[in-house]
Image (spheres, rainbow, N blue to C red):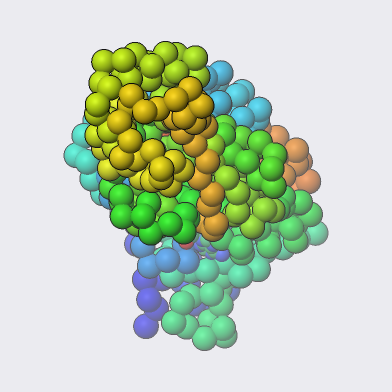
Length: 446
Ligand SMILES: Cc1cc2nc3c(=O)[nH]c(=O)nc-3n(C[C@H](O)[C@H](O)[C@H](O)COP(=O)(O)OP(=O)(O)OC[C@H]3O[C@@H](n4cnc5c(N)ncnc54)[C@H](O)[C@@H]3O)c2cc1C
């Protein structure tokens, strides 16, 4: 028995052949990858060209798996930012190319698309947008309903294994059904091929084989490990806003601001995740060892911090430093900072703090150095930096500049965003533009 070989379609007119035998029909489009970008492209083609014959190949037993687990199961579907020039600033890689793309399809368009299909979206204070249901299945159900309505043929447990361009400029795609022997591999032919395999190596291999360059891959959006049990004991403590400079091999390579969270293994939170994204390649090259220089009192300059400490000293001469958390820091964190850098001062009252000790306290609050050694895995959102070289893709259509009829969207490209819904937005935008161009191409090919 075939395992989930086909999802049979309402109406069925677009359904292709039996999965167990060779299919010589030429489809209008095969999409490899039933994730965010692949689905959105297929739905767009289906909506634009109702007669088009479209197949999505998905190696998993369920489609849209990352959508399901995204945002802690809530799906941070996009970001509350509707100005393309501002929006692109959240993409360490791809910002230049996405700018024109966002003029065609941006978060506002995605919200409208979802709203027209009955999905209400809400924005949180930090700009992240989620379905009002706080449940990613709302998005998946919407996409599935659309897929059935547009009669897009979804083949699950179907892993694309080979792709080739034939002399007549059509594509030949061979896929294996999981649980079946290789003798039951299925071959499809299509006029257009879309690679939307996310960060899976098979998609990068297909792209290379078809003549594309894949830029070096490295993880992005991860936390930093700090080997210090005293810090790890503060797990759960957070600071609403810090500024961090990242130093690798003594050189300052990136900076970021935002909330910081102490975890069981080191530091996390938006300020740290942003650094991991902006310096993904440098961190990879440095073996994930370096120093974070943290400014805990971001609202104030060094001089202002010095003045505040002096004022505090004047009015609290007998209080010990330990009992005097500064800059609004949680008491436990303040104690950790003191003990780790100025252990002699911890129990000292303010009236015994001289000028040079005050300067050291200013350093502690504005220039605190925390060495890290290794990367952790941020479970809520993890993406890959690197992918198909953007210079080889026409962003007006998402079509390959190397192979006509080959399209890309989503994480397979050398595009990634920081955490906050930006990665999905890139997938929706790329999928929509590709789908629009494929629909046009289908007309031209008719
Ligand atoms: C845990 C987690 C949470 C996340 N949360 C968020 C979030 O809340 N907001 C946000 O913006 N981003 C989030 N992201 C990032 C986001 O999920 C991805 O950027 C996005 O899914 C990329 O879409 P895609 O379609 O390019 O790839 P994917 O969604 O990964 O889809 C690719 C699909 O292709 C299939 N595939 C691969 N190779 C083959 C093959 N050879 N044959 C057939 N099928 C194949 C895969 O099984 C997969 O289903 C999260 C990521 C993770 C890991």
